[in-house]
Image (cartoon, rainbow, N blue to C red; front, side):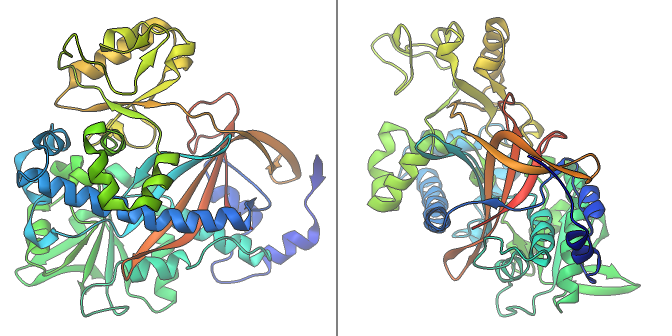
Length: 462
C-alpha cells in the first residue's frame, strides 16, 4: 500500500491549539518512525489486558510478601539472598524499612509480545519510561478522531497513583529525572506541562534542584520554593551515588515527610522474579498467594526463566525445566555447547546494573555464533553474585503489518515487523487501572524489540 497524506488530515491536526502536534512535530517527538493510525487490537484483547493488570499487581504483592518472609526466616533464605546479591548494605536496608513495608510500585508496565497462541511477557518494569510519550501520542491520535485504549488517561492515572496521604489530588508532585534517565526528560516535561494546564501542581526537576529541610522537600520554581508532597523517582537505584543528597531524600521518605514513589525497593526491580515464579520449590507459595485464576494466567504468559548461578550441581540433580538435545541439563556447560536450534534463549542482567534496562546487556542465543554464546554464558556466571544474570526462553513474536509514514510524511506505506505491546497501569484503591498501551514494531529480522531508529511507535486502539 502507498498513499499520500490528505490535506484535510493535515489541516485537522495543524488547526488545533494547546498540546496538539502537527505531523512534522510528531516526527520530532519520536526518534523512530510513526504511524498515521493507532495499532488495532480487539475488545477481547483489551479485556485480557484489564485482567492482566490486577494479576500483575497481585504478583508484586506476593513478591513483596515472599521477600519479607525470607528475610524473617519464614520462607527459604535463598530467595532474599538472590535478590540482595551485589547490592550495598544501605540499599538492602532501605528496601526493608518499616515505612515501606507494604508498598508496591504505583505504576506498572509489562512488555507483552503477541506470539502464536496468545501473549508472552518478556519483562515487567516498575520504574517505566515512555508514559509521557504515550500520553502525547494519545493526545495526537485523539485529536485526529481516534479512540486510543485506556480506562483512565495517563494524566489522571499518574496524578491518582502519586497522591500523597491526606492530600489526594491536591498533591504537589516533583518528577525527578536523573542524568542516567535523561533520554526521558522531554516527555516528562511535556507531561508536567499538560498536568499543570489541568490544574495539578506538577514539576520536573533534576536531583540537585531539590531543597531539603527537616520538615520536607521543596523545589524552586520562578524564584519561589514550592513544597513537594510526592517525589516520583525516575532514577535507577544502582545510580544512587550520582543522585544529589540521596541520603536526605530517603531519610525524609522513611520519616513520611515526603512520599517517594516508587519506594526504593531494589528487590522488586529484579528480572529474576520470573525464575522464582517457575521454581518448583515455590509452587505452593505462588498458588496460595495468587489464587488459581491469576496463577494460571501468569503461567501462560511468563516464559521459563533460570538464574545463572555457577554453584556446582550434584551429579544426581538437574536444572529444573531446562534441557538440550542431549536431555535434561545437569550443568551450564551443556547449555554453552547447545546448537543454534537448542539455544532459543536470551541472557540478560537481572537488575541493579546500568546494563539491566533499555535492552542493554541482552544476548539472544540464536542470533550469535556458538563462540559468542559460550562467552556470554561464561561472562554471566563469572559476574555472579555481584551481578546476577538470568536465562530466559525466547518467544518469537508474530509478524504483523501496520501503515507508517515515509519520505518525510509525504507517503504512507506498509511496514511488516514484530510488535511489542506495553500497557501502562496506575494503581488506585488497590486496583490496577489500564491506561494507554504503547506499541513498538521492529523489522522482522530484529530479535530484540525496542525504540530503535528503524522501529515504529504508536499506541493501541480498538
